Amino acid sequence: MISGIAVPPPPADREVNATSAGIDKNGNGVRDDVERLLATAYGADAKAFAGAMKMAARMQTILAPTSIDRDTVQAIVVAGVNDARCNTDANFKGNLLAASRANQVVMAAALNTVERVALYQARLSLASAVVPIDVQKACS
Image (cartoon, rainbow, N blue to C red; front, side, top):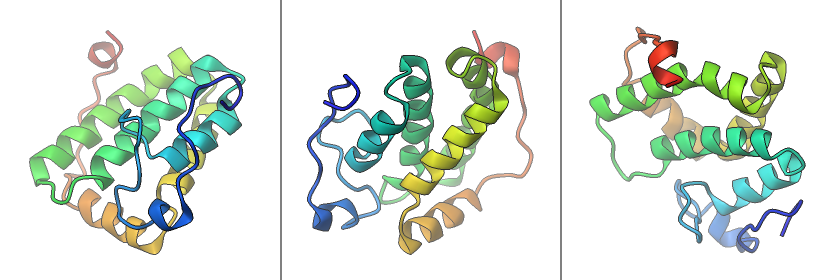
């Protein structure tokens, strides 16, 4: 338990960075080391923790698969952009700065090795630079 949140036990150091997917023993779509960090950083605020976990899960959908196609990456990017505003409103009380800081924490935790950074960049390069934004639809 961290900040009253049930989290998986800390993974062994050799497991954390053994693969790009890392370890997710509870199967919630977020690496255990990242989840533990987010519980420490945001556990006192359930909504902020939920928002940070949502960001981390989206990052993991790009990093975890052994392969991923252009259409899937594009769909993940579009969904992420479209729900960023909703996440700010719903989980960070409309505080764009707090949501941005949480995003930085998630990015730093998720991209904690040179290999993960390179993989993330390679996969994002598959996505189109044009991302349609539909906040109304994303927030419903």
